[in-house]
Length: 325
Image (cartoon, rainbow, N blue to C red; front, side):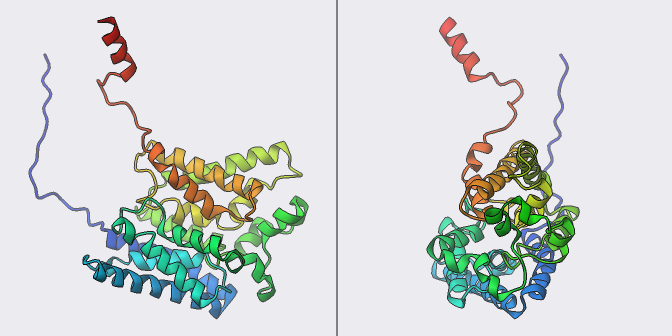
């Protein structure tokens, strides 16, 4: 009988140098190009929203941790990242009180109530966004700020005027000419640069981004092939609105997305399909945040997808053997 040898080593283990602190700061660096482009397109209003959301998130987390007797962890920059992502989803015309309330809800309801970083079942920024969107929909709708900017809203045009109205929105126009939407979420080229930077640095596993990308392209491609006069082509669905933002910065949130490498691409495929379905049949022109939230609710089910352990009998086989006995 062949013997199997196992190598057992004792600590200390060799650390690879990667920390959560470094991940958050590199995420901030990856979001910087989109923040710069947002200020370029929307002016000081964008800078106001970004600054207020980020500072509010940091202050609320500090107060919450001090009042709760927890260790203050502001150095990891996770609160700042949450505030910045929330700001990217807001219109540039968002009033100060809305930004203040939303950023506070992101931290309190999205993080602190679940024990802090790593315990949240949903993306903290999306929790605050959803609460504000349901409570003050007119204030949260970027399409209602069309009088304050010359930018056009391609998803609004598609929703209410059909595919004939989006002929002017070429891929180059969507990437370079700007579009109306969340102040940072509607910058596909800058966001793609930041996302690819995180992947190349090894800070972001490509399984979920590739899954979301495949889901958007597959579902929109099938719909467009079936009725091109009624449904937009896949490239438009990919570049319009906050799809790229979801691919690289919303869907791959570590605590609320699947951890199994078998479930990651399938979950991403599911989230990408929801994006197109909600945009097409829902009441919201974009629908990306709601699609990611719904997908995150299904994360425990996707985490059950894993290969069967080697040598383990299935429950059906065990029950059959018991009945036979």
